[in-house]
Image (cartoon, rainbow, N blue to C red; front, side, top):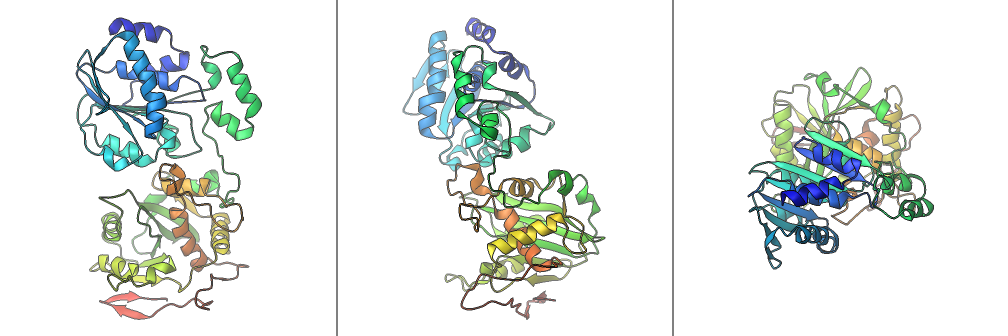
Length: 450
């Protein structure tokens, strides 16, 4: 095996050699189409210590069969290092005792079981971040390493993990042209067919902003994203909790207004699926752990549909939320309209807050504490109608977890910002066109408008 490994390494491109030489625990090889990503990942498998156990994962079973597995089998058979290959179990044992599980990310929950020493995600940009998180949780054996190979797909979670110089993470990037073993015409054909940012991504291997019709076109990472915002928290000022509710993704923004500047201090986030989907009590518990002794009051803003009674329980989402706040250190109020603002108005309100609404300075958010919120503002876009937010339903598409963070902040912005010229239009439900704030007492909590 060692001779085969050396022969393979000697034929590597410069970026492949750089990737193999990196010593960080988590590494990414990000390149254009045909830049040798899968080959680099296969070689890295062969470089793992003898008698270790690892997993090779592709986005779908078809991609696993057609690309990743096929490439690895060809390499391993050529080197004559396969001791046993059980296709029915998708389990391979190499001559040095290393065990390899071949799996797909079609159903991420099925990846929760095995204890591993290493993992490789091939075409990782086509998987949700949940897959990477789950695999990190499986690294309970030596050597405890993980790597990804992929062509990028926008400024998604891979950019947030590997593109910002985080300690313990390394990034190797290259274009299709770096692969000197490709036919000479290959890269030229791509450059003829692809244009603009799509060319930069698919041939150049670059993380690019691919949004055609950005909803939050006022967002600027230079102006609206700052370091150290969380440290400016003041326990005696009100905290605004901007909520959106979803069975798979919940991301709540925690906002304070300090000296006429709205600040997103942090986000409370849960992204997952059965058997542990996000839950409102756990979200509130995470908030209370971060702000255990807050004195300035909490005001909850959110989706009006959360006030509807559930047929099974006879309770509303906000009943559950307020239950979880019982015995908190300060009062908890609600500012929830009876009907949601029209989508166009809610987005326009949020853009105004990003620009600076009325007497407010432009909204700023903590660079390290708000990754989901930043991702939303960078990537949420309008659909073809130009009136609705584009929704991605494919769970394997990273964009399917978008919109929730910005929606929650939009409910807050559309009600609380000092707009000079925005009419408070709402989506008409049962002829209701006015905001209606119920004034009731709920087990000692102050609930309702101001």
